[in-house]
Amino acid sequence: MSFTLAIIGRPNVGKSTLFNRLVGRKIALVDDLPGVTRDRRVHAAKLYDLKFDVIDTAGLEEVPSDSLEGRMRAQTELAIGEADVILFIVDAKAGITPADITFADLVRRSSKPIILVANKAEARGAESGMYDSYQLGLGEPCPISAEHGQGFPDLRDAIVDVLGEERVFPDEHEVKDPDSDAVAVTIPAVAGPKDDLIGDDIDDPDAEDIPAYDSTKPLRIAIVGRPNAGKSTLVNTMLGEDRLLTGPEAGITRDSISVDWEWNGRKIKLFDTAGLRRKSRVQGKLEKLSVGDALRAIRFAEVVIIVLDATIPFEKQDLQIADLIIREGRAPIIAFNKWDLVENRQMVLADLREKTERLLPQIRGIRAVPISGERNQGIDKLMAAVASTDEIWNRRISTGRLNRWMEGVTTHHPPPAVAGRRLKIKYITQVKTRPPGFVISCSRPEAFPTSYVRYLSNGLRETFEMPGVPLRLVLRTSDNPFAGRAKKKR
Image (cartoon, rainbow, N blue to C red; front, side, top):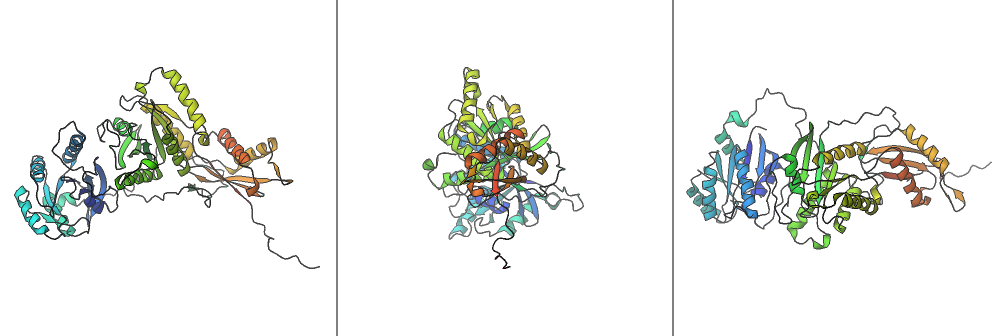
């Protein structure tokens, strides 16, 4: 991108609405309640022929630095330092407040180019508020309506004026990075009664030549868990900076924030999410939006790290979160956080591993790693488990190997007889990856006992070394070409 633009202003002036308008999608949470945004969010944006990065920030407030609002203000000040140009937003409908005057002085001291933007200019009586904004000493205001998309040609011209055409327009002869464009990703739905399999299709299931796993490809990881489990602290430790807002208060994170990271030369996109509480405790529109944002991050991710508080692990909500991730077909990893607070670690670890196997039988072999996000302990082991699980999640098994295995399994333990007729299995093939999905051609699939299907699934997991990832098995019968035909008379 050619430059970075930060959106700054007091709470509830429309910063996140403008951010969504520039990005072209409703990414940031928007509500009438002041102070919805807490973390700073960076995303690629476009305004007509201008392409740049835009930073959404928390509303500036005059509060002590050790309070939650004070830490939010510190994040905003970091965004000011990262930006090349600042959009200082005021509410033209409400007029200029003492807070606007105070924070105008703050952005002026940054010595960065500033564009004064009078938002909500479509409202009745907004002209007086727009004229009042001249007292801020930031030049002529640019009237816009972020919600209705008005005034953006003037905003585009104002950005070009303060930065210059050489800065905002990249060299036309510059070679374009083929990997720079965003790729549209189809999010699979949860497998329901009418769905067969979820995951990525295999082009040729009968092919024996299977490409090797690419351990250098970019990876998307979502960090999820109950409130106050230490998710944001873990992400900050991974990044090596205070990128996300943290503190002792539960439920600080609201938006799902994505940040870029690199581990052992591999590009990774991390998604920090809001804490997921029980559905009965989710109250208010804002928390429902936060939960919905977290669920979208889970569906978009490839590997999901479930952060559990090691001092109070395996609450009912922890198990429900794990079950949701498994049903979505994502690759789960359990991180027992706050391990530095645990005494008698060997005994506790053995107990946690036993509970993991017992309480999550639907995904045998799930990897669980003790970590301390605050003290940077166990992060490398956690990432090694992530890489290993992602490789299994992408695993492809040839049809020949599968059918040789199936022949041995059915010889040792054949399918049972139902209503006096023996069930028959014809063949098995893998048709999906991410997660691995298999189709078994058989007679009377509706008559197969659940216990036998589970036996086959466990055998697949053990024989082909696929622990800790969801497996999908679908039983189908081949169509009878003679069905529906009347018998010929002799």
